[in-house]
Amino acid sequence: MRALNTEGNTAGGFDAVWSQVEPVGGWLTRDQARALHDAVLALPPGGTVVEIGSHQGRSTLALALARTDATVVAVDPFEAEGMFGGPATRAVFEANLERAGVRGRVEHLAERSGAVRSRWQRSVDLVFVDGKHDVLSTLGDLRWGERLPQGGLMLVHDSFGSVGVTLALLLRVGPSRRLRYVGRVGSLATFERRRPTSADRLALLRPLPWFGRNLVVKGLLRLRLHGVARLLGHHDRADPY
Image 1: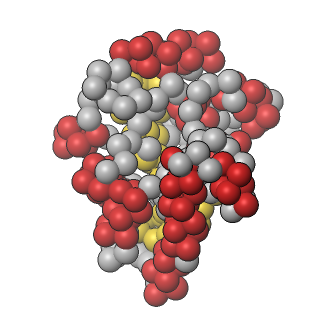
Image 2: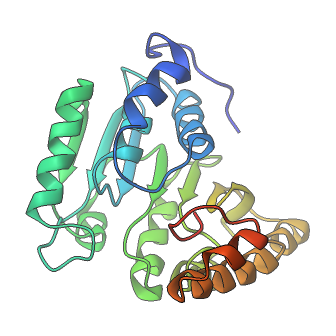
């Protein structure tokens, strides 16, 4: 993994970045935002970040505010029938970029991930995946990892927190000879473009008990049994992330 690059850093460091990120709606913890921020800092000068799924821009800002010389390509169609997307969400997303002063450094592609990937010819230094959470969509999004250079990182949100995402990771990364599991911050898992060892493959299975716990918590929240969920260490009304 690359050392942190101090060129082009946003003034004030991560605390200044978080002050801009925190008011934005979405599901990204402070520690997860810090992981995205630090991953961008480790990129070479002028690096390119591809973000799959932007919602209101919470993760987009964590990425774009880390470095003034990095370009973030936000891939989100904001389809009207989408669960969290649509024109209204896109308007909030664009307003948040303007407010944070990063509109000129974020390239928004209002298309599906697969369509963008099929014609992509530029380099990619970092990938963040938080798109649709069904198995097929996530399998396609994970193919962005093939575009990374050796040692490049792909961070995947809702890993071991969503059935579709977890199954896709086991199917794609489990047998992969090019991606290794590095670790996670909550549901944000990091994968590196590097040949995995047997220990790396085993490490990918270790979060599965936590995944099972998250499924139980989700069930309890649907039944409005928030007190029981708190006994399992979940103190949020939202699903574990």
